Length: 96
Image 1 (cartoon, rainbow, N blue to C red):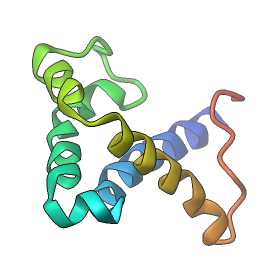
Image 2 (spheres, rainbow, N blue to C red):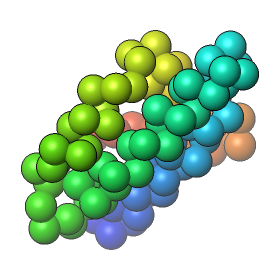
Image 3 (cartoon, rainbow, N blue to C red):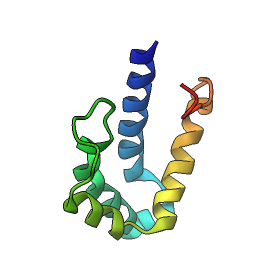
Image 4 (cartoon, one colour):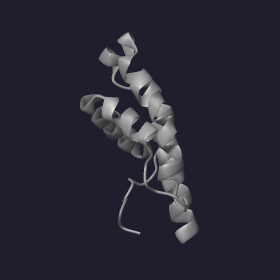
């Protein structure tokens, strides 16, 4: 069961990164939000369950610092709605 929970979390993280490119239409038109979110790929090694090192490096922290909070929050909000739109149960993060 723990493996399926980790797989779901990995899938969710990857989904957020993929969905991030197309979210928040006003900012996506200028490309700013998409570019900021794409820069977060340097953080991927630190958020994968089972990672040996979960302490982000300077590149990850700098990329996260440069992301507009509205861009990041809207991306997470949109991504969290995807399971219900695909007739899946809502995510229950932190309950495993």
